[in-house]
Image 1: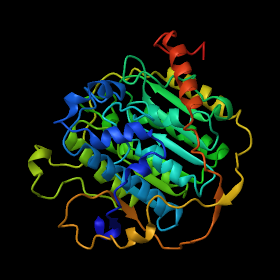
Image 2 (image 1 turned 90 degrees about the horizontal axis):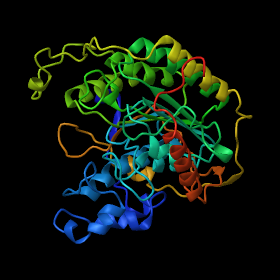
Image 3 (image 1 turned 135 degrees about the horizontal axis):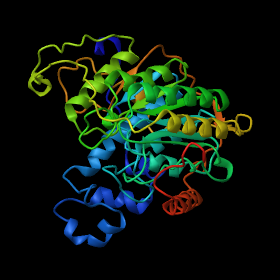
Image 4 (image 1 turned 135 degrees about the vertical axis):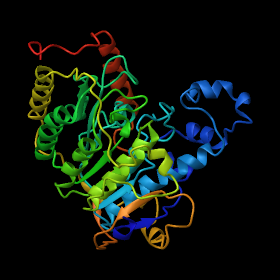
Length: 416
């Protein structure tokens, strides 16, 4: 497939890049902490939630530099019209907060990529089909109307415990946070019944200039930590549908804990974005044993019960469509000189990988359909990062605390 795409090695993100969203103290902590010295920083480990599901390991900061550089670099290429679609499967770490690690996520590359896109684009849409709620991204942009977040996730007794139907944003960002809370066992047909009408309405009323799509694979059937029942084709249908709108698209990875199925899913979705239908039988390779005994690209969903009844799904969909109909005219922003890129697009052009059979880390695949770069352009005022102020965190936490007092079960059809 790489013969149909250009593959780049993006620049590593540095600490200054990361502090466009994260606090200076938190990034400095990630930069200096190691397995050897962590016992000397117990207070900071607790303060920044670097423990248990966010452990310290050798090369931690370099790891964050690689995946974050891929996402920021992809956003820069979209800003300069060097590509229509950019893929960084290493990115999509949606739980990280301004000064806190969470859920295997240390640096929120998604927020940083969106901030980069906002230098050129008036409105950015973020879509999250990971089984877990995209809480870190939602919190960052909870009070702005320039970023809409739409998360389709398991809700109830499930990490991170946020993403209630009634969490819709605050202040200027009211109704710009869309949460689609789902129950165990959702299948392709039910998911499609929700996803397409909601996204069609969002594209109509919000009309984004760019889309960031988090394609977490833990929503697939058979995931070790998941409880949904999507096939790879059903999962990919969401991405294929969004690509039909012909809006600049940044595609990121995310969760996924049955590794062989994650590889299957993202391989198939790469093919979909390239317009290539892949054969189901996998070619022989050094890793064939991991995909046995079937050695096929696609998986068969299980016979688990779908707890998402038609009445429940219709109630959720109708409430969300009603909220979206309350949105005012498409938000705009005043024009200003473009802030400088966090990474150089010209440097990336020097890092085209001519031979994928050799080399080490790869930060992203950039699907290049023509280069029409405009070096001077005007854009919106982003001198203060949008949605990263303390008020957004305070309002998001307020909504979360209010929802803790609600039943974990969403209202029945009559209440919706």
